[in-house]
View 1 (cartoon, helix red, strand yellow):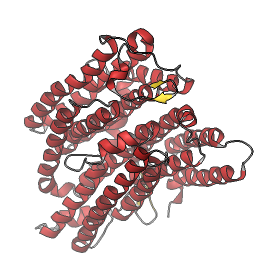
View 2 (spheres, one colour; view 1 turned 60 degrees about the vertical axis):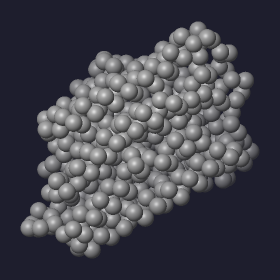
View 3 (tube, one colour; view 1 turned 90 degrees about the horizontal axis):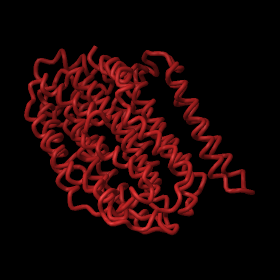
View 4 (cartoon, helix red, strand yellow; view 1 turned 120 degrees about the vertical axis):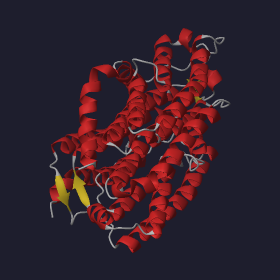
Length: 474
């Protein structure tokens, strides 16, 4: 048993317990800020441990360390750190500055890391539930506000349903294949002359369970309400790292154990991709809340990312990984601007509240415009390269329909993204926002630089994504 493969997860989990104990013991001052800083420090140390962690399989073949797992873990940790930085000022202003917040984010991140290294359907489920339970609580963290409590309850009820569907799919696969480990499943399916219909049904249920976690249509119904009701840093976290990890699960499960039955699930992924792109683009147009707009936007972006999975090739997986990387950072930047939307001490979230931002805060206006144009896919911003890679992979795989739908959806999406830009630069000026805290400035400026200058790091990111994708097609 090569237990050293899980050292990053072990270290982060033990640190979380220590921080939890610290928060209980310290009573003289509010332990929220020191707990958050300790959590960020622990995650930075964990990132180093992930980079230097060995490759291989451990714990009787249910846990794996490889380039794919390292890629996803680093992005998940980065997304969690950005959300915690945004929470430093936001939670204090909203009077939810409690030390349990960073601990919950930490354990949700441990769940995402377990999901990335999952080599068994049971490890997949455990990691997913650890992440989900923490996020349910985070969504309802502002318990005195009706919207937050409602979002947590809705996510819990619908998430429990999705978990049940996923577990049912896992039980069907185990019943027909006799194993839950990916390598054994791959070997059994490769040696089978005919794939049992029950096994295909099990695969469909697994896809449905994971499609809920990435909010793909028609399993997206929780997304707008949860995005709107949850505290903004929680929404920034939920829309980033957890979706990334769920997508990693989908990629690993479909390409590794079920790679030999690609024709049985490929069409379903294509349908999910087309439905998500079109619905996300069209449903976002009438939105007046920036958080609900970002919710429908995320549905569309998950559709674009699914194009790479539908291609079922190393180039497709590489494109999806690059796309998810670009989405994580431009999404975090956009939510940093949303966190900055405060007027007279109260958070505001209407698109109309951004009116005239270019005159009251030109720097913040420019950053928001960069994020919006990147989400459209305007070159040379990061979103352009993500879409270019997944569209290219689809063409190489002989799927021009996905590319056409993707382009049409991008054009439709430009309508609501440009509406935000118009409000910022054209609409009559509204009263300015409260002064930006340093934490918001750090995240928004940092993500603006990454989004605007992504071409500088495109080469290394593509090499890392290529190495990660190659792992799934050995």
